Amino acid sequence: MAEDRGLVAITGTNGTIGYACTLQAAQAGYRVRCIVRRDAAIEYIQRGPTLQQFVDRVDFAVVPDNTAPGAYDEALQGAKYVIHVAGVWPKPNYHPDNEVYYPFVKSMENVISAAKNSGTVRRVVFTQAGAALVNPDDGDTLGTRMEKVLNETVDVDANSASLRPPLASAHHAYCAAKAHCMKHLEAIKSKLPFDIVQIIPGTVIGGSELHSSASEAYAQMDRMSRAILFDDVRPRYAFGFVDVNDCAAVHVGSLDEKALPTEEIPRWLIAAATTEKGKTINEVWREVGEAVERHFPKEVEQGVFRLGKHNIPINMPYRVDSGWTQSRLLERRRFKSFEDCVLHVAKCYLDLRARDEEKS
Image 1 (cartoon, one colour):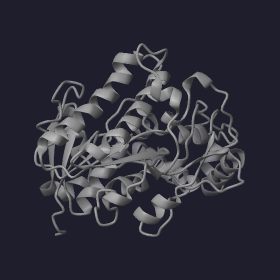
Image 2 (tube, rainbow, N blue to C red):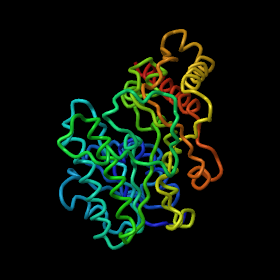
Image 3 (cartoon, one colour):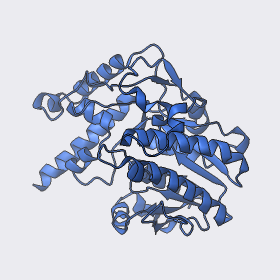
Image 4 (cartoon, rainbow, N blue to C red):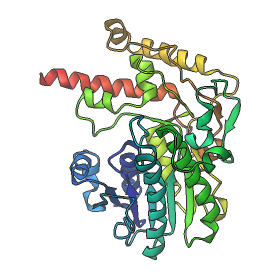
């Protein structure tokens, strides 16, 4: 049995990043408190075969409304660390203020408050987003030249950080909420009795052992993989790409106070593979499509995969440079490439599809 490294409370554990963090934290010797919003989510998580190996290390807490005052107070009692992953995807039909902006901001405030009240928390990790780096009023004019660099010192967009309700759209609310949270945490971190770590992930790509069918895998598949494997809706934004387990490794690795001492925590950690300088997104996208054709020729010919080799994101203004994060938290290995990520998703989907056919 691995050493007991203390209790880490993780929000959003029924989601892609949260569940991967749960598994990696348990494997690394942490006890894990999975924080979800509904009892049904507990049953969903518990069906994971890998998680069942760590039942003695995992417990659960239900927080139905993470915007309510004191929402996380009980759930964070006794925790040494916190990973706050839970969030809202900004669907166009969501109310910008009530269903996007305030849930992000209030839940952030409640996590900070609960961590203070706990008296035990030493470090809180927040999952942030590349959306905080762009101005939503720019619309789809940012292009795909990747002329800016997304690294550990990148700036939050000043306009997004200044926006407040009432907001024009769910997209405005998402950019504004993330930018506000990132700037706010940066401003108060030196005044808190615990460390703050903020992580900007790229698009998170990877299969999940929680998926029970190909249709479920497709429904929860990331928008990049759907665009290239199924010629689905063209993604609006891309801020790099990251394998789900690499993303979790950055989150869980950042809890290690020896590997990442307080005085060495950067402005943000970047959980995404470095983009090769000089290579265009068109080239990257085409290469991935060609790799799918090489690895799964039968499925491409039969139309199981309807490749969108030219279905590149509309806005991709940043080239990722995650060298610092990679060197410190991935134990000298590299982030998996976009190609490796998509090929893995394709294989997971085909495995589930074959299992569905066996059942029918």
